[in-house]
Length: 238
Image 1 (cartoon, rainbow, N blue to C red):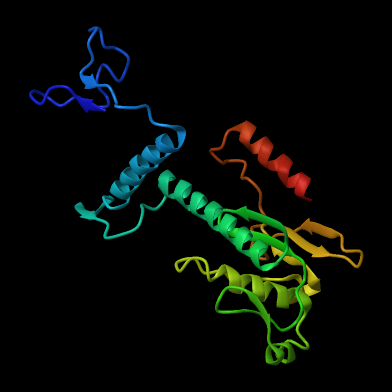
Image 2 (cartoon, rainbow, N blue to C red; image 1 turned 30 degrees about the horizontal axis):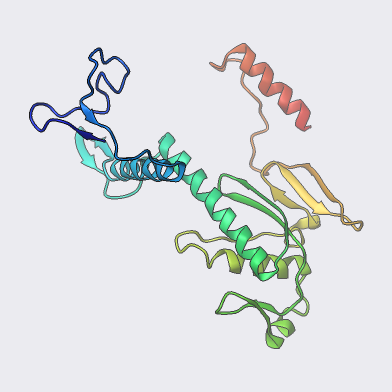
């Protein structure tokens, strides 16, 4: 919308009329030539959010030894905005990965994301399968010979990882598989997962060897309610 008068203070989006507090019968804004449709409203919202995010990302200030500095690039550590942007970016990235996999015939049975950890279960691929320059799947005899003694889950994970690393230049994926871990059980957050002979996925509780053996200290500043919830969940995991 455009304002009617060029003189005086410019009306703002936080003005009385925008807050539904305008008492006059006339508006300070000219009516639009037409009403925007749903897609146009989404586009305008997206453009406004883009401007806000770019401004926030390029104007991060911090203090060091009583001196104020402006961060050269990137977001502020611990910022809620950065967490939201990272989760949104991963969500869109995974959607693209799923779509690309479907287009080339790569079957991803399970595709789950927790922040930057991705759990993928895929139908195993034939040894020697490779990703061609045009983005399609092909077969290479030399690669098949190299993978002769390689476990099938590693062969599949390598191909999925290769595909994932062609999508975005600033996102680099690595992979882990059950056969690469002791006992054939792959750590996923606080679980170990594997597939039995009947192709059933099983799991058990897992924690790293350096994890503290102590629970919440009695003298902790946490509330008694929080302590009870934490200790109860510790028992559930056991």
